[in-house]
Amino acid sequence: MVKWLTWCAVVAFIGIPLFVLPASGSLYTIPQGGTAFIGEQGLDISQTGVIRYEKIGWFGTGRNGTSGDPLATVSVEDTNNFYIDPLTFGGRTGPWYTLPNKTIAFYVEDPSLDLKILDETMNYELTEDLIYVPKGDQVGFRIETNLVSIVKRPGISSVPITIHVRQPNGDELAEVSGYKLIDIGVAASPFSTGPVWDTTTYPSGTYTVWAVCNVNHMKDNYPVNGKTETPTAGNLQILSPDQLITPPVTPTPTRMISNTTQVTAATTESVPPALSAVPTSEPPTTAQAQASPTEVPGTIPTATTKAPGPDIALILGVIGIAAAMVTRGKR
Image (cartoon, rainbow, N blue to C red; front, side, top):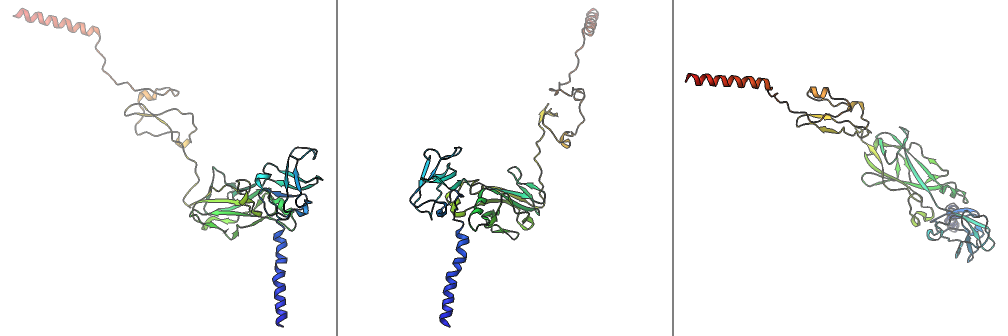
């Protein structure tokens, strides 16, 4: 009995990996005519027709057929552990052929990855100019990528992509509102999660949200924004309940007329109706009321007393002379 139980345990120990390894190992397996991405390592290309210690060749893009010599060649040291080195395969995408018989072994592609954040409640996409989400709104994600070609590998139904969410305090979330963010299975592009994040119970502040695909260490070997990861910058701000999304208002420029008078200058900028008129504490002066609407009044002149005319001066002078003569005669 003891021997039988021991034998069962050994079988179970050996058998469990047999059920697990094919599913996980198939991520590494490239079939003939399949697609491998720049940065992937540890690939099994033994099914592509490539022979160990032989070479594969690239004849360029935009060329017809494989006439002539290849523009680049790579010697394959191990068909079960092949690396799509960015230094070697960067800029050399498209079909790679076995040599010397020139049959297609596999295709090399430059990965692309894009993440969009959506306010599902208000039905708008967050952008560089609009990163605000009112507290309580539902948030979703949309992934666009060419990495879905991986699903054509044996036994693979989706490609794992992780969405990172960093909170204002620096901590990262493994899930939002119960939706797991690690190794999301993406089978088609674009892929939408739908409204999975209820922001009601999450603290207000600026969040950083980005996506990563590290299948076969491609992100470790090729960490490029837009390819194996998306930019890691603050791109979502959950507003507190008393905040509103309002555009900034440009103040109306003013021009000083005198030490005590201020008149609004003409401007070509569009001003909201509520701000188009600036109330003043004093009624306009006569000079301001008569000013042309297309002109800006200049400095208001200081009021002065009019000087007497020459006729009045002559009369006063005659009277003064007569008075002087009368006074002299009396003496």
